[in-house]
Amino acid sequence: AQSVTQLDSQVPVFEEAPVELRCNYSSSVSVYLFWYVQYPNQGLQLLLKYLSGSTLVESINGFEAEFNKSQTSFHLRKPSVHISDTAEYFCAVSLIQGAQKLVFGQGTRLTINP
Amino acid sequence: DAGVTQSPTHLIKTRGQQVTLRCSPKSGHDTVSWYQQALGQGPQFIFQYYEEEERQRGNFPDRFSGHQFPNYSSELNVNALLLGDSALYLCASSLVVVQMGNTEAFFGQGTRLTVV
Image (tube, rainbow over all chains, first blue to last red; front, top):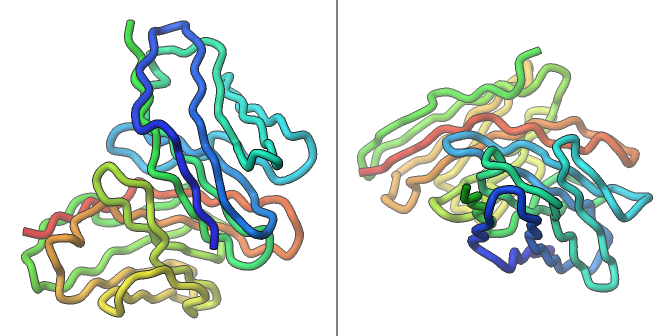
């Protein structure tokens, strides 16, 4: 079975400061890795994903995540955050083969202060 | 192109009642998955439907059941509602693939169920 641990339930940062949201996973087989974002009263939106290839993946709005197989981590980073980045962020994994069930972490609430 | 649509957006039910939630997948998608997101928690997988059959199921009791129709839309039914069933119910659609790639699941806005 797979599991995901998000190490911080809440992360407050100031606007334009860098941020890192931590994610560790456990799986005995290879998995795909995802970061989803959830704005208040909305569903989930895919932020970025790692399927294969380069271990550093980037999103169109400045976020990036690095897959580290040896540490079983997939931390999310942004060098300079904006007020609009305030949201809940979820790390998730799925098996490479078979059904595409997602296993989510508990989420990290990112709060940006002016 | 409409994404994943869910109805209703909000629902209030009394303990012991039954509820049906509906989901229309993104155009071109053939697989629908349902998740329960309790307040302050990550989504938990309930089950997945493909070709009108339940293909995978999470750790949820039989009170939770579903259906997929020939047009790929889906329903989630919950019987004998408990207070603990209060949550945001999310539907996600995707495309069954046999090769790596294009494994993104698209989520709807969810149905907020409150059991009183």
